[in-house]
Length: 153
Image (cartoon, rainbow, N blue to C red; front, side, top):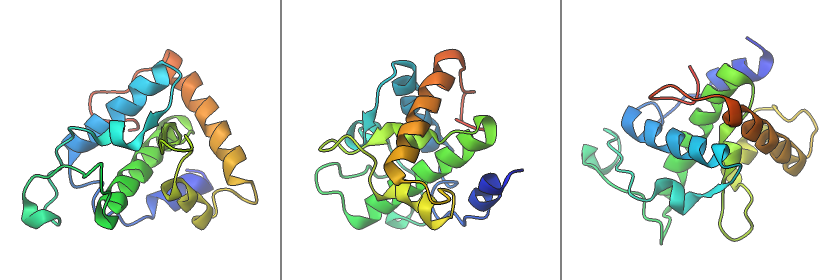
């Protein structure tokens, strides 16, 4: 286990490990974008995905509000994207969440900057790091398929 993988595995997840079906749906959509050598915006990524998290909405199923984007929904998606990156890094040494972007700038939002907080960037510019991860994701998804329920393990 390298230093990046170690740091990512130490993260305490509040949401992302609580709904394997939502995780699989998001992972599959990211993989499909990668196969097309394309990016996917956050709204398209979560559109129609039903989340079942015991610690949100009193455990009742819900969908992320793609029009209002309340802070809780941003946090949930950000964590799922971080978890997906942890899995893809563990498996193939790239951050799959690099393919998920906002629709105004077509760049990642704050969820990707958490790598700076983890010390993963080691002085690199976030945009340079992101572009490198996009390239690695495209290359990997061109020739590899994820298993049924993950982008990692």
